[in-house]
Length: 528
Image (tube, rainbow, N blue to C red; front, side, top):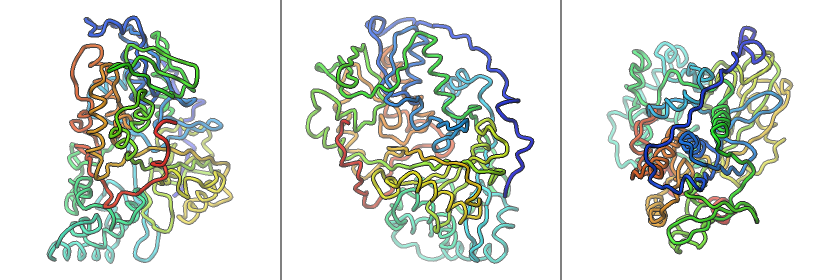
């Protein structure tokens, strides 16, 4: 399973010098809000949505100030760096069918935007307990070789039995998947990973959520793709290649930050917003800390929707506060490890369908880009653990998490403990907004307040409490800029629903849980 790294490029010898882009200010033909020339637009949050908005405004020659709470831009799409090693938090493929977003990405990165092959596999234990890899997307010869005649027969018999037996009422993920793929395939390839991602048994996950998430994949469509290919990406959730910044996704946002500053805009770090001051339907002041105040012409905010409501002064009406308190999130943490020796596997990442370990996915950072790993004699991986902020895993000491990571690599047969050079932990709060059964009503209530505001717009993943990817987040920012600058009336909340993405043609808002969990983060004050 180890890979020979001797011929791979390294940052020291193969990275071409980046060419300096020519940045031209292009003022809008007409400005719907003339005061945007006099006072800055204040952008809250330096993640994909916030920086996209700021870049577009700066290109128009309009004053803009970005306030980022952390000491690094990128939000959950940032790249962590330790001793020259670069770590992607969650794995960010740059693939979109939104042409204007694709154009923007290439404009920012130029020759630093690599085209990388997708390689992902499923790690699972066969019926004899042996750990194996199965290519994903499925390939016929690989399926036949890895499963073997006995397990192939089990899969087919299980599928045929599911196809002919009475279905009954389908209320759970377990029932829905088993009825379409068969119980054997469900146990092998759906149960363990799904339970890790969502933190509950599959018997507590809704059937209609399964129907939405797995909509174009059945036993036969997956098999057809395995043997005859996925031409035109017709089977959703499967792509063959993607773009990726040479030094990780953070390079995109760091370069965009440099461009904003070159165009005259400001990107300020370590500036946590503490209060949003409104006068009627207009935001008039943004407070940072106890004594720093910005007076904006308008605000584009990617603050978590929950926190934005809590920071507003005067407070929105009571039902808006109550709705914000009910918003839920699923979180995760990454244990990043540098190991002596060759790569553990060639994939971008592998999905761990083994119930005997806690880890859900493992990334190989060199496979994303060779320039992420400075030493060809070392391997660099990221183990992703799904959790809820405040639970036992989230609260575990970093050193214990590092030891858990190397121990589980050993259990999987991927690495020896004595290969560990160093490791560290990065926690990613509010990574996955949860759509529970009251989500739509809560958002409708919060929107009834937001829609009445004249110069304040929420954008992005957490800003809209939507499971947006980076391209959708950027698109919400683009539409927000249009609304402010050109006076258009785009519905920001509909951007994601009308977009197309490689893993799903339409993002769903079905909640996974039959009974949504009460999480520790729900007990936190709305404004922190």
